[in-house]
Length: 178
Image (cartoon, rainbow, N blue to C red; front, side, top):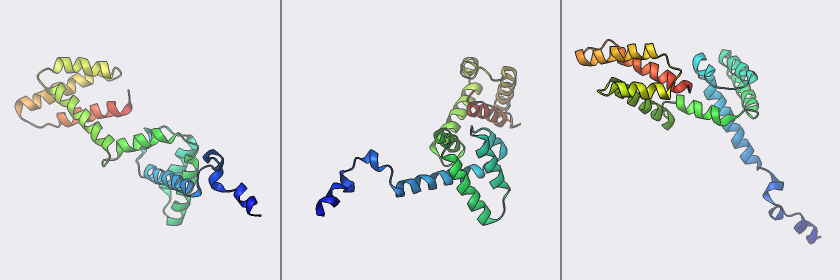
């Protein structure tokens, strides 16, 4: 009798046959639901910038329209279930880029600020060439106008908002991935 129990002991089975533990599966589902909750907190433009299935996009939009707490909870569970079939790593990366407390967000801001400083700086012609090579789909004329206006603001020590507009233009280009 003792031999039967030893024959089927769990610790003798290879990990592949056991599969993931129930606790691990619950943690993964909770993480997917949390990611889904973060998605529901985005505005339309931010949501459109993330690649996902149409079913997931519809579920997120429905969750954004709900007001009842229990209905929202159920919808978030449904979103978590849908996310099991999604490629979650690109979604997670994009969310981190949008999250102001993440390192990815800080890195993006540093990149944009460095580009702006170079474009306004003394070697702006080389910076323009480098920027256009890096982002060939940018509107070159708009970029040149924004750079000129920002340089004028710096030289006259005025703030017409051109530097901020240039920053936003660069940020949109860097975040679009083009």
